[in-house]
Image: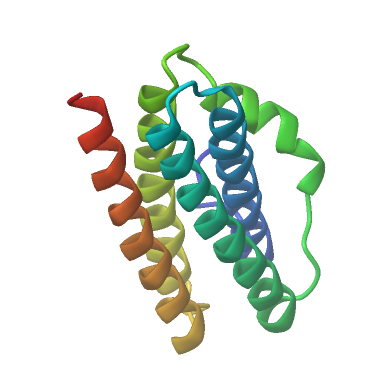
Length: 143
């Protein structure tokens, strides 16, 4: 994703929602493609969790900052997150990229005094869930 410093709060949270939607698509696609039942269930657990996160973020974004913008860029972002063939590695890289992006969004909103307590709580919660996803994927990668 591009630098976040010049973005308005509505653009930032829209990009955050967009990232979560792309993350969901990556995990769901990996769920469909995996051959091992244990990995199939792991990817399902992850994509269902990300789906809830994306829905929460979209509702919060609209409620706090106004309408979402630039949601048509989903294909471009999803393609960028799909850079490796190994499904576990792909999901792991995507989760780590999300964590880095969420941190930038959080810091930028905070610096611009546009971070409400609810949005703060939401981003923190999403990062916590993403850390669980990362742990699961790291364990799967060790097999």
